[in-house]
Length: 245
Image (tube, rainbow, N blue to C red; front, side, top):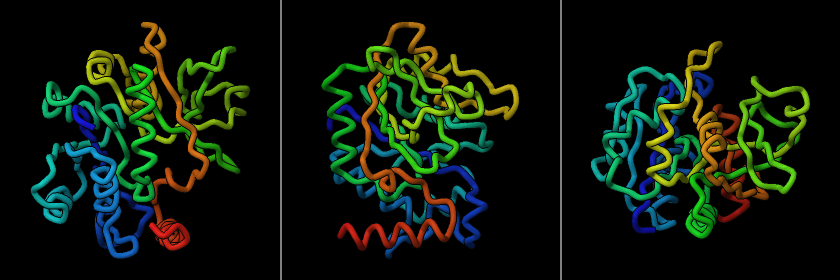
């Protein structure tokens, strides 16, 4: 996995967790959410890890330790904004950037390797995990062309009624060709309603410029689920016990 850096987005407040700890430091079966994810990334062969921190950043950095790089996102203005905060740190240091959300401790090394291998093997500008859920959460929809190729991804709030019926959902775990990411990130607009910049919208720029995108479906959607509550943590602990992970 030489030439690949992982960017872990871990700046959010996590108010729904109702924990005295920052969300990414909440323990899941003995290890914090963020540490489990970091360990799985390293087990997959990704040695460069950078965390985007924000809420109680000093506590998060102290808990995870000096082996990782950190960048600060003082205001949480969307996923694209978070990635942009790491531009100066990562530019020129990696040919590909794996972007993932820091509340996903169930993402397994074998799946991470599969995502990266698809990305490298196809030469795509962007490769991402997808999953189907029942009922579907309010995630972005993956829009495919008549030939089955990925055209773009659209946040649920921006979907037409027809697009909202799509059941293949984007789960916020990506690998980007670094040059494509940094060249097109500035094109991501501020959403007129939320005031945030969604990384999903970079796919519109990729589509306009004819850059290929790949989707990698994951059969067990639980593996990609972000933990937002203590009930989610209990679910994750059951999943780990059931899978011997």
